[in-house]
Length: 340
Image (cartoon, rainbow, N blue to C red; front, side, top):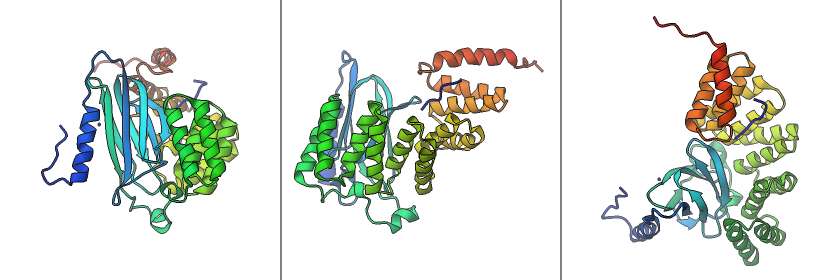
């Protein structure tokens, strides 16, 4: 193919009052049943485990089960996030911050129409780089001036309501007031990327990487923006730096694999798409890309298996129709299996 693509809660009697109160609040928000409502919402709050302080500017990614990334945002100054106007179905929410363990939650919104997630991020004690480095800029919020923080909150709220340009304006003012405002930089870049303004996204992300050189999320996003701009050498450099910090970043491997596919370097792309599938076997697009690679290297039978897995995971995916056509064509070229 020519085109290349990408939660019974049990409360213990000895639970702390603070956590019990949080859980009760979660129940009030979560258990909302309304079969007549066609759209659903996912909201939540992220805190840093230990001191339980709100985790501002943390990256939250929404995925469709088996269907890849749907949306992403940064938490506001109170650590809150909100995905609205979703269709009923099953979703996955990934919460990540540099030097903290990624928290992955599966959310089923078929009977209920609103889900609330309480996320406590635990420090990553397995990474030597994190153990040796100071707290990442994304986890340090005390230095941000109040006026910049207010602009960030307004921008985040506007983006959550779908008011992209209003949100971008507030976020730009936030980083003008405080140029090292990492959370605002990431959210501003995300808004630019959703609007396909790749040059603007690249500029903001380059500044974000200067603010926090250890942010894998910023490096991966920068690499993707540069790939979109066909700056392949620079994209490869950014993504390689991200993977040096965290080789378990499936997003980084996927993006780097796509860089190599865009530049017809199939042999270089293959191990990165393979690693993506090892880390995230339910990512439909990775199976599609894997099929493309196998077809290019003359292994149609193995390519067929990857295409069939893509269709199983994303039967109504963007590329489902042409993939079905390709599957039928491949089947006709393969020798029929004889019954023993």
